[in-house]
Image 1 (cartoon, helix red, strand yellow):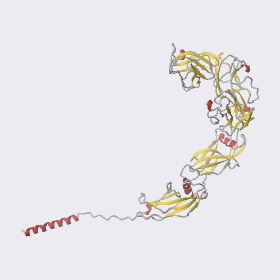
Image 2 (image 1 turned 120 degrees about the vertical axis):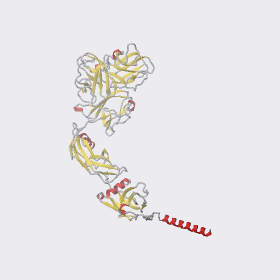
Image 3 (image 1 turned 30 degrees about the vertical axis):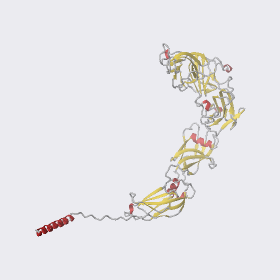
Length: 595
C-alpha cells in the first residue's frame, strides 16, 4: 500500500513539471523598452552686446545668436527653438519671439530688431537694454529647457517713409475746386513693426522748417492721400501764401506707432497757383445756448452769416438776420475756429477786437465787411414794397404796416394784399444807395417763380395772376441759396380727427372749419376739440395746399405759444381734456396758441 502511494505521488509531480514546461513555452517574447536620455539646457550667446541701429542697418543682419545643442534623443533637425526678447527686468511678460527649427543659430536684421524694440515701447535714439533667452523643446513642445539670459544694450532708430508727390506744381481754380489736383504716396514707416502705424500729411510754406505745421489726417496703414484743387488751395492759403497768388508749399509724412514713436519723411515741394476761396463767417457769442444756436462762444455750432454774392463785395460782405437777447455779446469768426476773429466798436471792425453787444432784445441785421473792416448792427426786419403793395414804391411806408414777421434766424413770413405794378421785399425804410456799404439797404426780387433764388437789389417779382392776399416767405436758412416761397393766403382751415363739430369729417379739408384772419399774419377760431387727437392747419379746401405742422414736440400744453413749421412734420396733438378752445395761429411769429 505504501509503495502504491509513492508511485501516485511521483506521477503527480511529473504531470506538474510537464505542465509548467508547456506553459512557459507558450509566452510571447517582448523586447525591452529603449531608454531615452534627457536633454540639457542650451547655452545662448550673441555676436555683440551692443547694437546702436542706424538707418543703413535696416536690411542687413545686425546681431547673430547661437546656442549649444540640447542633445535631445531625436533627429536634431526637428528640434524647436524659440528666441524670446523683452525689456530688461520684465521677466519676459510681454516677450517678442522668433521660432527656429533644427538650427543652432539665427540672426535679426536691423528692421527686425527695430520693430521689436518699437513694439516694446522703446524711445527712438535712446540706448536701453533688452533680455534675450532661448527655449528649446521637441517639435511638439515637450521637454522644454530655458537657456541663460543675455542682456544687450540697444538703440532703436527712426525708419521714415519715402514721400512722393505726383505733381511738382498745380493750378487751382474756384470753378474746379472739387476736381482732383494732386496725389501724395509714401512707403511704410517702421517696416518690421508688427502693429499699426498712423500717418498724417503735414504741410507748411517753404523754408519755415515745419515750426508750426498743419495736419491732414490720413489714418493707419494707409499709404496714399489725394487732394482736390480746393484742398490744395487751402494748404496754400493756410501756409501764408496770399489767395490768388503763386507760392511753394512743403509737405511731409508724420508716422506714429501705438507707443508714440514718431518719425518724419523727406520733404517734397509743390508750387501752387491759388485762387480766392469762398470764405465763411460765423457768429459765436454768449447768446447761443439761450437761443438754440449751439453752445455759448462756440464757433463750431454758431450760425453762419449769408455771403453777399454780388461781384464787388464777394468774399467781403456778410450779413445775418437773428434774434439777440438783451446785453448779449458776440463776435464774428472766419471759419469755425477762433484763429481769425473780429470784434470792434464805432462801426470799425478789428482783428481780435472788443466783443459786439446789443442793449435791447430783438431781431437784428448784423453785417460785416472783412475786407474794408467795417460793420453795422441795425434792426432785422423785412417788408413789402412796390406798386402791387399798399406801401407803393415808397420805403418809408413799409414799416410797420407792411412788415413781415420775424419767424426765425434768416426767416421772415408775411401775408399781404397784392394787386399789379410789381413788388419787392426790403429790409429798411430807404432805398439802396449803391454804396455796397455794410449799412446799405437790401431789397430782394427775382423773375423766377415760387422757390426761386433771390437777387439782392435785383429784379422785381412778377405780379400775381390774380389780385388778393398772398403768403410770402423770405428763406435764408440755407446761406448758400436765399430763396422765397409764396402761396395764396385767402383761408386757413383746421383739419384732423380731433374736431368735435357737426358736419366736420375726420381729415376732410372740404368740411373742415375755417379760421378768421385778423391781420398781421394772425388767424383765430373758437372750436370744440376732442381729447388726445390730431389736427393740423391747411391754407385751402383740398390737400396739396400750404399747411402747418407741429414744431413743439407734440406738446399738449394750453395757454402757451408753440412752434409751427411748414416743411413737414408731426400733427399737433389736441389737449388732454375735451372742450371748446380758442386757437390763435400767428404766421408772422410761427406760433400757435390753444386757450
